[in-house]
Image (cartoon, helix red, strand yellow):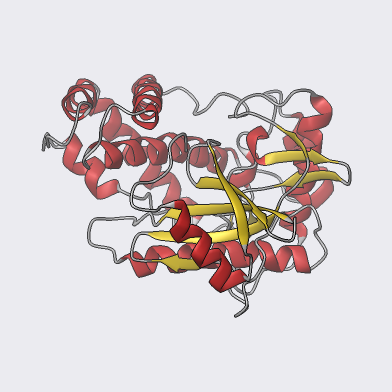
Length: 331
């Protein structure tokens, strides 16, 4: 996220990190990175440096309790911890706190996790910089898929978070919560028929996916979730880890010529299914659009995050209306 969350002062975050992880911080700096979690760089009084993430607990529907969102996040991060401890050292997993937990609550709204600070090259959302970069991500994904099933992992149930709010917007229910609420309503209304068709297609594809054999998956192995360190490549940001069909990680890795999909079949003996690749392409845009709609149906201002969200929503709705593949080739 580009701006820190309201209601979470640095002093409160440092107090939680000290209490739960024993990290006595002497400096803290907000890091405007990515577009999901909030990030801080923390230096302890002992000179060690930490990367601290805070997630606003993302409830999947209006009537879901924050506790359910927290448990999903805990299961995902614990899956990363289990994969790392099982020998996949490229998995950047959170450090357990004094009680052995990988994530801690901060009130009803937030959850915090701590990581050692990694030194290395980071990459922006978008295209892989070259074939070697793409291949490195592919190799890490294939290794994750071949790992023993994580005992703590949850299985993908194909639920799209905030679908209920998407449905309300699609039905013409308007709210006045900020500067993007009315433009959002106009945008959704302009493509309502095409969006409904996309949802029907998604539901049909999800029904077929329930028979697929699940494997451990990262969920978002794009270029921005990779790092190159002195010790090799690393895969970061595991907050969406699930047991799922392998296509969940593969749909956006292939350069468009089918080469990595063929390589995956040769390496694992599993041939990626076109219908499941389509499922996860479509789910990407539906999920992102639902998240943006959720944000604009809540109180908001014309902040940097809101501007970026509006841009993303317009792009998502455009692709859904056109029936175009989600996210390009390596979003």
